[in-house]
View (cartoon, rainbow, N blue to C red):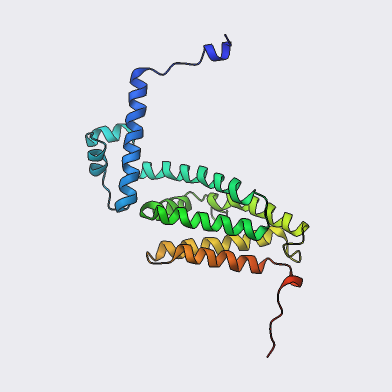
Length: 215
């Protein structure tokens, strides 16, 4: 028997029950956040949904903001999946960015009851002033790579540096999320698609753009 496998500790019954209870609390909190929003959800409601006493809740989480913190970690993981699925796939830079934007918008709309709070938490995790927020920094490198590949294939304008173009792309996408966070009725999916189409036109090589009438 492999010694590495032989020394893997076996989870005890007590640890397993503790892990399962924590998972149930987290799941019930997510359901409540999605249906009625983060602010409207209380610890007492989460505890009742999980069929536990409020005191038991605090044995596993310091408060409901701790749950939100874990959700931001999940968002980072999901963001990485979207990057691999859309930004790192074959296709033109325009197609990749559009696919990424549409999926991000769709996911945000599906979780709109809590998505704003998660995005705000992501913004709060931005560290020192002047630094790029982590959730944007994670997208910056693959978008820059996508644009640079597009420049080599002459699908993306090369009169501007790929890094600068990536900053502009992120700025346009981020602006739509900020507008959505400030206005509950903001049409996020529509605006993100429009932003992606605008980006696609803005990064096209100058020679492939249709001429505009000067009349």
